[in-house]
Amino acid sequence: MVRLISTVFVRQILVGILQVIILIVIARGLGTEQMGQYTLAILLPTLFSQIITFGLQSINIYAIGRKMVNENQALYANLIFLSALSIVTGLALGIVVHYFGQYFFNEVPVSLLYLSLASLLPQTFFTVLPSLIQAVQNFKWFNIVCVAQPLVIFLISMVAILFSNDVSSILTAYVLSHWISFFILLRIILKLIKVETYSLKRFFFDFIGYGLKSHLSNIITLLNYRFSLLILGYFTTPVVVGIYSVGMQLAEKLWLPSQAVSTVLLPRLSNKLGEGGDDREVAKLTLDSARLTFIVTLVIGIAFACLSSLIVRILFGAEYEKAVSVILLLLPGILAWTPSRILANDLAARGFAELNLKNSYWVFGINTVLSLCLVPLWGLIGASIATTLAYTMDLVLRLIAFNRVTQSRAFWHIVPKPSDFGMMVSFIKGLRNAR
Image (tube, rainbow, N blue to C red):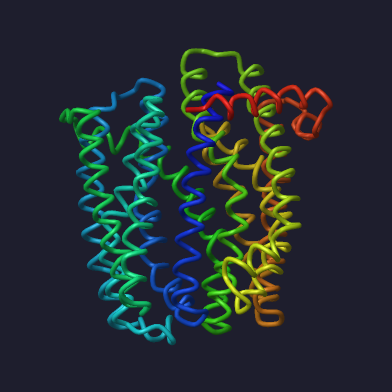
């Protein structure tokens, strides 16, 4: 499994590099003010493409891993539900933008908000459908699909920047690239998985309970990721939002190791538990993975912190220099969230989605209160501190929940040990052998 995780990690690195290049090109081309407008404009489709899925990606991995449905039946249900949800939500958001767009996004032209909504449907499909490939553990095609989207966005964004550095042109390229990625995804999915009709009513009632619990947890987690942007947009200016966005997106690239581990681990855990695997053995695998991933992220994070000032100054320019403070203040929270993500996947695979949901409520509440108190006082510095404290509390609460379910002395086993050195060597060898 180490080699498989290493291969997925290599893909995550490639995707991360493409995303950083896209960020650099757009940030330098637009400048801080237009970058802020762009960030706020794409916030609606980005958020709602996650909100309206109703946990379908979690249902796919859980139900297929437990062999309750097959991937062909799940694909049929996904296509029907996602089409209906995307169309209805797009129309509803269009009405909201028409009547309230200037109130909530007072420094963003309403035309940009309308334009960004055109990317809602393809983003929604791309949020869910790759989970079908992940569920059957076809990681070769899963990696290809996940690289295709940022690669297409990169190519079209480069063309747009060459011809125009206007925010509307870049946003048009953003929408177009999502639609192209969507058609590529559909072609790959339909090549790998055949559509098999299945009772939509049965699919809904059999899995909606689990899906909603996982979904609400994921939505609140997403709001934790992006809530600071909404508050900054309300209390400050697009310039501040643009700077914070750059720092936040750079810091979040440190989640690449934990994303790779989670991608491989979740369907594996679902299969093991579905086949009657030993609970203690599964808990040990999860804690070992979380601990090792934390160590790898910590080493990368220290190096990144030391070079952050140089990276921002060279890649983004002097006008984004304050993003360095955002990176440094977010770093402890980013590190804390790393093992927490892996523990959350274990709890979800065991069917305890409600524990992840309860955890998310508390963390979102902490983040909301702190952000409302600190952002009006200290702007992007306040947003960074609030987010880091919330992420740190997430790890503490997740460890308590995991320990309660598994009786595994989670707080003790999450602490790095001398034997982890050998595991890190295996991980590095896996990276070198990854293809």
